[in-house]
Length: 85
Image 1 (cartoon, rainbow, N blue to C red):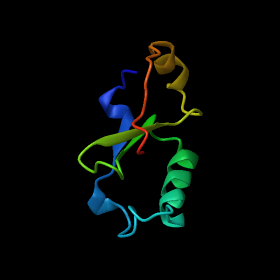
Image 2: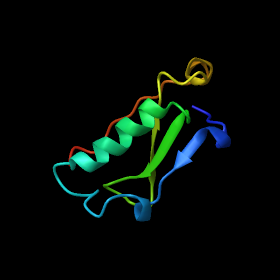
Image 3: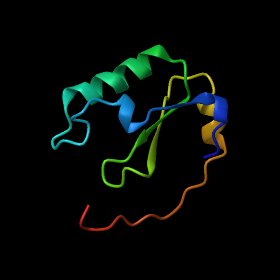
């Protein structure tokens, strides 16, 4: 999936609650995601990975007006996650 840079909201670990890496995931992180979805301002939300914080996870908003157009260009790939995850 190719995302237009202006359609992505980036959150750094400094912008997340102090417990964002806790197990199980704290309600505060769900509240951030829920608020982002309801706002419908950004096609994607980029947040640090809990497993590898230097990497980003991209969440796509399926109700955003650009979602259908962007997802049409997606390519399916075979992915085998590590069993330890």
